[in-house]
Amino acid sequence: PEAINIQELANRMSERAVDVIRLLMKQGAMHKITDVIDADTAQLIAEELGHTVKRVAASDVEEGLFDAVDDSTDTEPRSPVVTVMGHVDHGKTSLLDALRHANVVSGEAGGITQHIGAYQVTSPESGKKITFIDTPGHAAFTAMRARGAKVTDIVVLVVAADDGVMPQTVEAINHAKAAKVPMIVAINKIDKPDAKPERVRTELLQYEVQVESLGGEVVDVEVSAKNKTNLDRLLEMIALQADILDLKTNSTRPAEGTVIEAKLDRGRGPVATVLVQRGTLRIGDIIVAGAEMGRVRALISDQGDTVEEAGPSVPVEVLGFNGPPEAGDRLAVVENEARARQITSYRAHRKRENAAASISGMRGSLEQMMS
Ligand code: GTP
Ligand code: MG
Image (cartoon, rainbow, N blue to C red; front, side):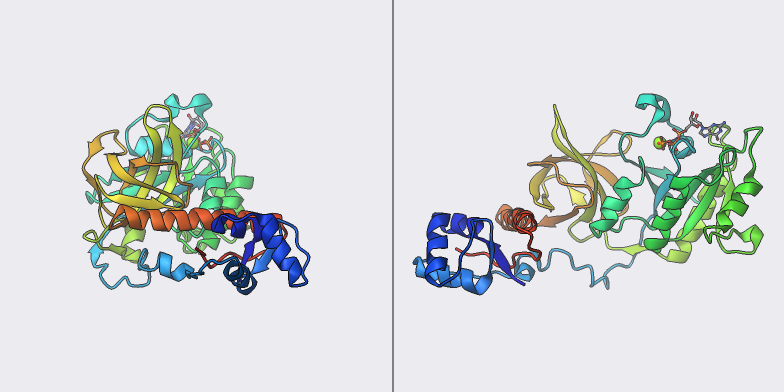
């Protein structure tokens, strides 16, 4: 049901909440300032106080922002987005590192991934690009999924051959299943003397992950991030899976994407790592993500280079937000700042409203704005 908190209603009319309560009392209802009243009652009160009421539906504000349903113009092929998941220390970052021939692990504090990294790797075989997302644990993935963000096309499950299936391996399996994305198992650390890849395959059976050699359909690849063993084969298997998915996009439309992570950087201000999913993001574009807006001031690639634009499946750091958005927020380019302000103020408002509603023990969100 559509409702509004009394304090919020008073604020929006620049009236005192106590006057709103007094009017409600005249109508025979006793209320506290934190109470939530329905939209019709709120309208009556507002009119009684001499205000004109204009109701705005959520659909009016958000309409046209994401035409996710209309994908008829998605005709260009795009690179797959692969999320690397697995138990702590099973070698996710090392594997990505080896794939991109860089060295991230040694630069990390204590070797533990502090944030999500997003990188593009070019397969030496096909020359095709693959976008990888490295997750610190699964909290970020869960948060994004809870917020309806769908960024991953394929999950690579990393399992250390010397350690086997562990609690976070199981979590990752459940995530992949819930997200309904195909999974490829990378059995890592096969260079280790105590590596038991066969045991990993058997353990996976318990969680209904049946690899090909055991009669199932899940592809598994034995790798060593340390010795760079079988990495080409892993890339090939990802490329093959991507071909099956037949991923398409449209690079010519205004950009749409998802915020992978965002922070407030001391020197650079709000910085958001964004995965562009459709269209092309360019310097100067006016953007909204969640309740934040801005104008793209700079784009920085996964290589640390300043770039002019970023197309579909490209991860990029975006500078120019007025404040850091949240992981999982959808990014969109809008036509002008007035539109951006309208959308973000509406969302910020809704956010406050939802918080207030949950505080006063009421569920449901505000669907109206009053003036
Ligand atoms: P978190 O980000 O903390 O969850 O860890 P991670 O899964 O990213 O693991 P990381 O890549 O940081 O590797 C953990 C440890 O395993 C490091 O000491 C790596 O050097 C080691 N390691 C990773 N891959 C291999 C491998 O193929 N063989 C051997 N012998 N060691 C490896
Ligand atoms: Mg890591």
